[in-house]
Every structure is written in C-alpha cells, then in structure tokens.
Length: 345
Image (cartoon, rainbow, N blue to C red; front, side, top):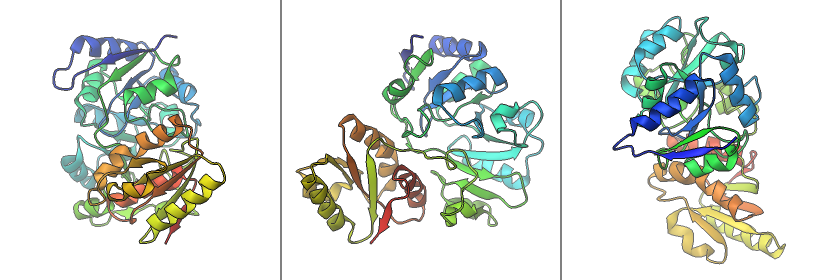
C-alpha cells in the first residue's frame, strides 16, 4: 500500500483534499489526521470492520477502547443514552477542545470501539481540519493516536509516516499539533465524575467546574492501573532507556549520571529546560522550553523522545516537574515513557 501525505493549510482548508480523505473513511479504510492534541488514526467509528483496521495497523490490544471524535452535539446524542447536567457543563466550557467524556453508549456503537464495555469515550476536537474531516465523512471517527502501540504519540505528520508508511493510504499534514499530549479523559457514566487520564484540562481547572470530580485511584496510587485508553499498557516509550529526575537536585544528578553513562560508552541524550542547556554542551541536548510555562514542555515532549531515537541514543536523562496542574499530565506521560523510572530528589 502506498501512503500519501497531503499538506493542508489550516487558514485555507482545501475541501477537495478533505473530500478525498472522507471518501477513504466512508469506504472503510484509515486516514491519519491532525488534532490539537496529537495526530489521530481515523476510521468510521460505526463500522466494526473499519475499526478493526486501526488495531491491526497500530498493533493495538483489542481490549483497549477507542475514542470517537464528533463534529457537532447532534452526533453525541445519537451515540449515548444520557448526557447529565454536569456533563453538559463540561461540554459548554471545554468543547470543542482536548477533553474526552465517557458515557453509557447506545447500541449503534460497535463493541470493538468500546472493547465490549457498556460505555463509549467521545470528544469534539477544536482542530478545524479534524472537524472538517468528520463533517464530510458524516460519521463519528474512531481515532487513537497515529503511532505504533507503545511508541511516543505523533505530533507531526512525519512521525505518523515513520510508523504508518505502507499501512494506511493517507495522511493529512496540518503541521505540528498545538498541545502535544493527549486529551484529558473524564468518566461521566456514573454519579461520581472521575478523571481517568490527565491532559491539557487539569484536575484543578475541572474541579472548579464540577466540585465533586475526583482522580481515578490509578492516578493517585501507582500500583493500580487506571481505566483510561493509553494508561493500561506500556505507552509513550522511546527505544532508548529513559530516566527522569525531579526536584532541586535534578540537574546535578542528571549531569553526574550523564558523565557516568558516557564513561561506560553509552550514547547519552539530555532533556532539560532552556535555562540549564549550557551545562550539557558535551551531550545531545534538547530543550523542554520555559519551566515557567509547562505548555512548552507538553508541546515538545513526544517529538523530543522521537528525536532522541533518530540519533540512536542509548539512555535519555530527563528533568521532570512537580506533579500538580499540567505537571500532573506531563509527569503521567514521562513516567510511562520511562517505565516508571522517576526519581524525586
């Protein structure tokens, strides 16, 4: 299969390209497309056979549910049994945007999408290319991240091509994803709204909207596996081994470790914030941006991990952040990227 990349200008969307992509979706095949979070691997969310191709292309476990992407509220009511008042409040304040809500599903949603569960995860992306594709396809689009399962999520079309070349017919290239980490996932299927996966919308922000919202036990106790897509399995992992250090002594420890690993003839890569880059001139070093604006870090994290692999790095030493606000979402991804090897100093 030949995989073709079509560049699209968000400021002047070429509807002819969108129509080609929607024809592929309606025909039961896959299209990778940009969202504000990461690139998604899309299929007709109401077709079991089309969604099965997602699992095959990604090598994704079949018990890992998919998220349905919609372009308008009418689609939501066609897919779910009930939208509670708290859910409506979140929708009013956070959609379109990087928030996924879980509802009790209607029978129209295929079991393969929900992994046999009675619930379905849904979000309305703010990315105009994504919403245009959904509108032209005239169906909710099931779309996990467009990478091989377990690898860092793609934030640009070239990342998708690395993982999906020859496996899918089309990639829509809308440039770099704005946010860079996946959506926040909130379970609204019970009377106790629960954050299953942290993302751009933080616990603190959502608690202001819904005071009784809580964090899933798996986000508080690392010995418990969270129930959200992307949290159950090894995920976001570079090929290189990765270690994360957090706290006032992080930079000194990273430097000490880097010298030690270099002495053992390992190729070392460093991920630290801009202000400390100069301390690691003898290593391959990538900036995590401004420590006072963690949106910089979320934007570059996955791309930085892929860049390290491109350079054949053996060991990545990364500076982490405090586990609050957006930092909780970032550290959730970093911990999984490092297989839990996070050190607090």
